[in-house]
Length: 133
Image (cartoon, rainbow, N blue to C red):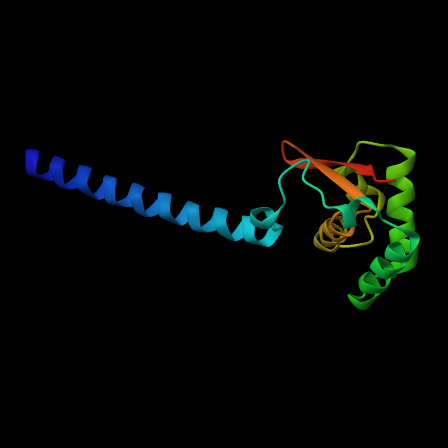
């Protein structure tokens, strides 16, 4: 019986190693989809990001419109919601803009941050959003 016990232990160890590798692949896919691997470190900004103008806001709206979102209105609505409630959670905005897919909103938030119009601070499983001036 000790041979079968050893065999069972070996199978369990191999199955555990396979499951661990599978979970790591899933995590990497999720991180790649969310884009968390290429995010700049918190607090690191460039001069171009700090000097956001209304022209950049319009440029962002045009790029959002190119992706199939009603860009001007959506960008203005998101920026107005963040300005009205600084530190609003990104997940709360998913509910406010429930007619749009969550992934499209995530892309918009990342683009607005990249364009220097928003600041996102990581908090557990979401981000807090702040309007840059």
